[in-house]
Image (cartoon, helix red, strand yellow):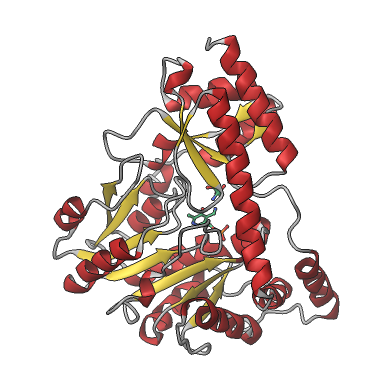
Length: 390
Ligand code: PMP
Ligand code: GLN
């Protein structure tokens, strides 16, 4: 038989699925895969239930329900001062994962290069490669994960089509500063490249930090595709509602990839998300401050157990250095060890790197869980650490 697609046949199961399965097998608290353990806002779910009963439930417009596209355009104005034409510059997708694929396939030709920053979310590279392009990874380093401009400049070539930026950044909770982003924008403009911005955690940013969409910086409005996710903004990760904002000339092509990837997205969920995006500032501020308190709770627990806890300024995630616990092994081995022995699951950070020299001493914990769960996980890790590493 002839070989199937090389990129996808070479891939394993995602680390999130692997660790969730291991957590279930061992009855561990799952602080691996990033999903909240509450059900999301009642009013948003009630709006979805009503929309399903009231209908229509047939194919909605290909680019998304007008109500949601209008709400996304309004949110761009409200949060970032961006003027967006909802008819030509917004598209709804089945999750940010689809949005990423649509944008990358729409922009890349075989032979193009796409700069990504590692640790990188796992869907980026396979989609870039499936489009026939090459992912050019630029590794970031702990503890501050700042943009390494020398390496970035060296990564640009005349084949660089785009830069894929994730801020706030999974898995390390980095929120890139305005100064860093301004310098990155200058490089992108100078090389006449595009930016694909994965901003799914845009509303999960903690005190003292500001989310600056790259799209708002000089020269970027016409060359940026900005991606959001209702899954993160409303703690409804199973809904898979994403949205892309970009200039009309790019959105026309992105619309064409979407029409052959999913074509449309469930209308009832779209109308509920439109309602959600119109919620008051208190909702958005409350979401960030509740997660910030959870970050603090878990970070304190991890520190007490003996981990070196890194800063996390946004997202659902905090990373921690386990070397002080005396474990002699890699991050993969340590995640397996604590899942089995401490009954707490986490994700090894090296899973987000393809470059040599990935850190092997850091793991990612997800803190969007009930406080009692975070306390119990901390207590289990503390007990494990006291018992000594096997
Ligand atoms: N990008 C990043 C960085 C993520 O963490 C996630 C969440 N899994 C996604 C994209 C995908 O979002 P969605 O669930 O809306 O497809
Ligand atoms: N984004 C989620 C995480 O980083 C996982 C999503 C998935 O399982 N594909 O944990």
